[in-house]
Image 1: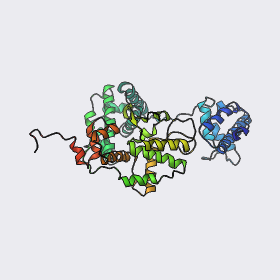
Image 2: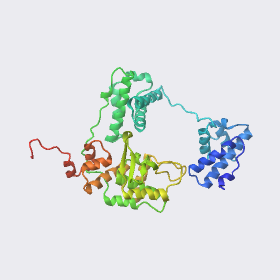
Image 3: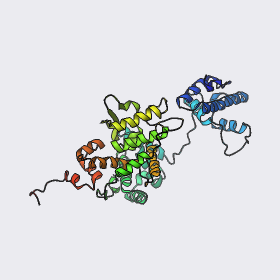
Image 4: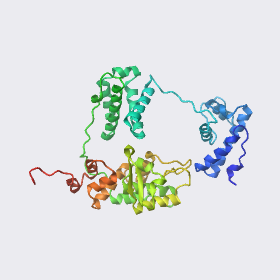
Length: 404
């Protein structure tokens, strides 16, 4: 018998106890943690009975009263530590409809939030952009509107001066690539304003692009010895070490982006065919060969490190509740590996350069590297081999009059 079944829940929350137990098990909580959370669940249910309340009364005020009434609580306290599992159980009750949904605090100042939502709807339905791209455009739109617009009525009088002021304010905070991404999103917003009639003229031209020089010095890939140190720093005797080793192997051998690693699912690995499906930028899906060492690293993690949970992501968090890693978490894995190896911290994208550099050292032509990295244009791949004259010569056009 599981320890969690020994917790008796009476009162208005009793009908939901079994479902909550199942959710804790599915999220991979240890038996002791699940018992602790269920005791909080039972305690809250008894408190509701004593107060003559039901689960439908569990709003924020009600929870605050429960916290203040528990032993040792002080009525009127501004901030109190809540009993273990309170946020977890409240979230579960809200998801199953037993408790009211959390109140949404409006941040709509002067209608800006509604305008951003309309912009996102336009991008989704009329431009067909990916959700990750829409999320980024939303962030830039909210940033621009909060900086330059007090009320939606001010959009009609927007001019080039405000657009330029916003771009100039971003220059000191961002690198060239990040700044160009901001300007791209800003241009989409300004185009939306004009198409929807919010501005009388198009202000797209007022958002200048910075010059993104291709010649930025040597390739940023790590040396083979540095990669070996990264991998050796993973303690493969532990579950987390096996996971991190598999992530680093995927990044350095296949050159995947951080988000592509985060979105890998168990069904994306075709063990019989020796292939892996990658969900890339712009809703693009590609099938890549699965190298033996990459497959071994993933299989070792899945067999001896990955918790047996319902989550279908290949790489999951090291602690419950077990959920798939985010792209930011993948980059954190790389940064932590750099610290363990005594190397300067780099992001996951540097390992994409590393994969390209390793292929060049092995003699792979540039077009094959582009196929692995799934580039649409050869000039993009050239940026990964800036210090390789032989590779760049493949892209050079012949001089019209013959050899110079």
